[in-house]
Image 1 (tube, one colour):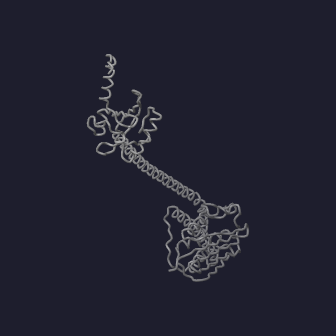
Image 2 (cartoon, rainbow, N blue to C red):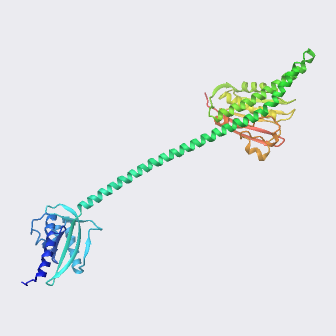
Image 3 (cartoon, rainbow, N blue to C red):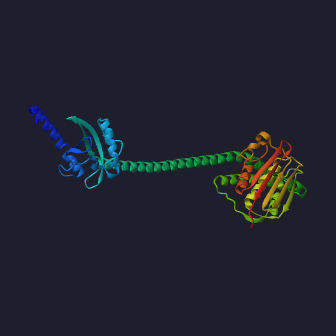
Length: 404
């Protein structure tokens, strides 16, 4: 046995101490995989007593289902020995004496002594590390779920806020529109009421002067003028009240059974005071007289369409009103021989306050047809029209109703 000098001896003692007290498991094997040396940490790691690992093959420390593959790996390492780490990218498992398995990370290196190659394996139990990583992974998943849930809640809150904002904006727009409607009505009403009020005032003043029987004709003429003026004012008020109720959503179809033919006859009689000299309403009704619809809506529809036909037709013209009630659908045609509607303006006919250029000198609110269209829509019906300038206009309506 060679005698070591003191420096060499100290170096060997240091290496032995390092091997003995290293916290990592260290195992040394020969080319055949037989363990020649194992430090205390390796023995504790695999559950063996001191010196018990020496003489065993490294396959004893590998799970049974993987041990058969290790022979090939060892041969490959012997052919090309080099330092390398294992278990960082792939999961490596080791086996204790009692057969339990645990994850490891292994670093390999080699050295040659007396012309024999030996392999050194540094082994670390990474169970705690993997458990910590798994815990971190679970925490991250939980955090992601919480973030996702919070994000979803936040998105829903933002969506609700956006909807509330949109609803508020719509409500403000509607309020603004309603205020504009009222403002425009006040302006329009002050103008439209002036004429009938002046007519009423002058006629009443003149009536008081006609006291004899010979003057009955003159009195009757002025009484008719008062009636016509009052009817005009009533129509204007009805238009405004209907428009406001529609805007505020206070009107909904409430169908009842009623005699449609009688209703229209009463309306024609009521509006007769508006007829111009020699004007005539030709009324035709076919089918069942009884319907199941909203009576007030139907009344307002006929008042608007008939009064418009009267206003926009000249003296001595015929206004045709045709109604048929078959198969639970009321078909209506109101035809006049009036001034007609310019083609370029027909697309705006059902807009509120809209009045064609050729109708500016004729009394009206510009609300009537927009109200009619809303009523028809509420009753699930359809409205259409054809018009030729200076030849007249025909409105066509189809309103369905359910059988009683």
